[in-house]
Length: 213
Image (cartoon, rainbow, N blue to C red):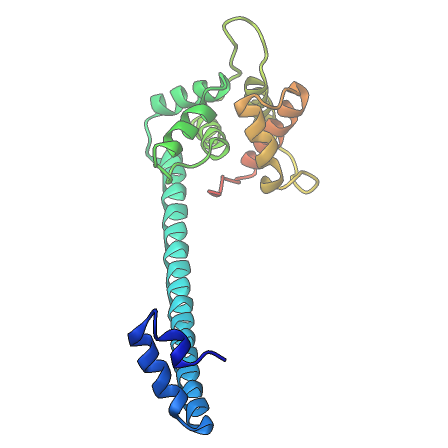
């Protein structure tokens, strides 16, 4: 064990403190060290409790923000169905069918506009509004090609026009990921994109609208 003599030549001030402790009876020395340890433990516990409180508050703020964003996205979809100009809806539908909507929305989100609905919600809602306005007709590409995004649009027109039961059809949530692939043209299966659009169309004919995700 080091003594004050060992420490003194290099650190005189430390040597004095060490000597004072070393001169105490062992029981007093250990009692003091125990109090110091308990004090440090109390501070540590207090810090952990404070950190936990901060985490709870942060989670609550994030949850409230998420709910606000969700409400803003749903409000955008509701406006498309009720009050947006028909010409605006037609232009947006054309962008969707041309495979441009997903990139535009991704760019907006990258710029910090987090309240934008995703491409699937917006494009299908544009189709629903067009169907409700009674002007839902098949679109044609300028070069005659049927791209995945156009196939989804064409399938929706067919499904909305035909209608029918939705009992055996996939749920809306199950269609989102592949539909996103069709609109961004990362999913190249034209037949599958047509089927996805057809399912959305039948559901829309039964009164279903898009719920913001």
